[in-house]
Length: 435
Ligand code: NAD
Image 1 (cartoon, rainbow, N blue to C red):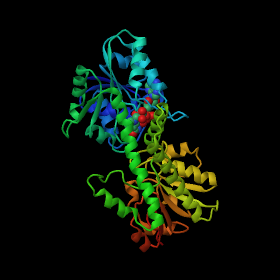
Image 2: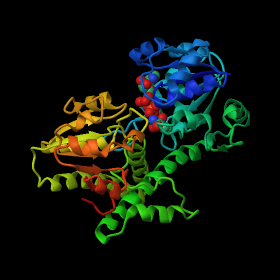
Image 3: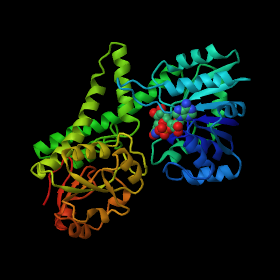
Image 4: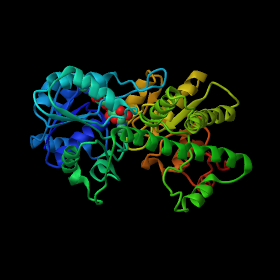
């Protein structure tokens, strides 16, 4: 099938690459000329495991091309995916200006029937608005599909290739068949396509993200209580996760969630509720507990050092999660901003996110190519991201390099007993400190 993807970011590039891998011919359109120039040179502007190989392979075979020319993409495809950003506005609502602008431009360039598919996360009712915009600009026939994306950064290619489910929001039977054909190659786990109306598809995305964020905030609240009452949240997590009604996923307490989706989608959901006169009590609490988890972690570090400012901290992990270079609303970046504001100095390492984090923090932190180099002379090590390479480090070397052998672990990566034996003072979330 001939496909166009507009908006070549984390979602768009993965979508385009994976659809090309299944044999489709895909035109990738982005209005960021610099990004398109890099992609044309074979340089992948983001880090996502497995993505570079797929993109390079399919470009070589002529199944993937990159352009800033939207008209070219519209002319050379039957299905056009919209994967542009929908960032938060100051009032919490989703900024839909890019998606509306692209929808309008597609309509203006239509010469024949096309299927327009929204992958971006958009509030309920956006399907109506996009259809209206397009109808006001063209007499040509088109159909609209709401197809929210559920991939996770860090395993996006895997998620796209083998999804838990595909949500297709359309009331049109022939469009369902086209979408089925497009997604059939990814149904290795059996048919997992769920058809529904567009409004329900749009809501499914927000409800899924809010549910996952709720689990994290709930565990952070329990962790806080565990600390006060002398229980160990890691044992509690395993105890409740073993209940098949609850399950083990998304029960990890820590320094709070971040990223380009959960915080923004929660704000948008609260805003949607307010517009309908509904107080989104649970969702608002999720947001509050998350902010508290971050502030509490920073406060604990400050308290430990008697609120002194002449502190140098080594940081491991800057991305909002492991296996990505994305630092948008990263808990690490938020917390570091608070620490810098207090006057504390930071030396940091992240396997992929050093550069974007340094840019987000206006160059106010020192970035290292190696985690151990960041430790020299630091007053403590602070861990923000659960990268695999942080899980079993050389504790002797850590203790030797730090000015004081202290770790503040915002992801509960270590066994406190192991750290105690290594002579390291260990502070984590929801369980007793050791050392
Ligand atoms: P992103 O910022 O990485 O990519 C968006 C791309 O759209 C950028 O390359 C930008 O240049 C391009 N763009 C913006 N305006 C454009 C225009 N007018 N014409 C052409 N291109 C334009 O964003 P992302 O993380 O890929 O997210 C995209 C959407 O998917 C968002 O709505 C997001 O909520 C949703 N989503 C993201 C994820 C994720 O993990 N990142 C997962 C599921 C859903």
